[in-house]
Image (tube, rainbow, N blue to C red; front, side):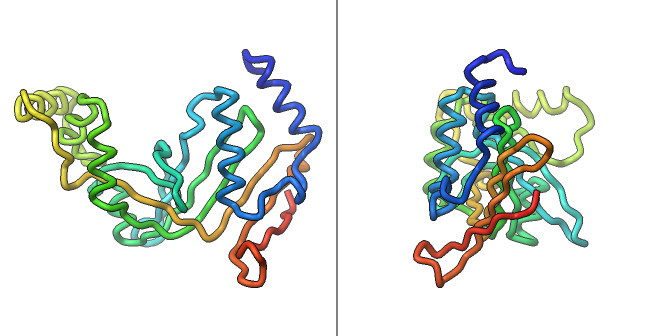
Amino acid sequence: MSACPELDEFRQRLQATGLSRSDLASDPMEQFQRWFDEAISLDIHEPDAMVVSTVGRGGRPSSRYVLLRGVDGGFVFFTNYESRKGAELAHQPVASICFPWHVLSRQVRAIGRVEQVSAAESDAYFAGRPRDSQVSAWASRQSDVIDSRAELEARVAESEARFEGREVPRPPHWGGYRVVPDEFEFWQGRRSRLHDRFRYLPDASEPSGWRIDRLNP
């Protein structure tokens, strides 16, 4: 049970009533926005946190949490292009994402190609970050081995001194990615593990361009 009676009531109602085909929007991005807006309105912890899974050389997968920073026909997040995820996306520009809204007994999964957002989009987002986060983007060689915390803090101090008294520009190795899915799944938890699962796949014969199938739990 959560500390929020309203949230508990909402989850219990969802588990009891479930998810039907008639509940779903014909377009998966619209359906995502409905659920995302509900998660925000219920004030759950970090509704914008999503797991991003990439594939390295040899087919070895890796996953991590990032924060969703835009929904515009795809799912946008920002990171260091030279990080592990950046290197894997350069090699294999596809990803799987998952929004694990456990307290709602819901999750959304999506799979698709990944593209870098424009430099202008990355510049605009970076300019709005807190200054400490801007400095950190210069100081951290994300995913590389580092000898100590002291070394990291020294790099931060070096970057702070470098940009003292002026705006911090976006590092050339830092920017945004957009995951553009061609497969979605909406999962609603039910009792006895008889969950409701619906998958969207592209289908030119459908007016919306998407076919919706119910999957076994």
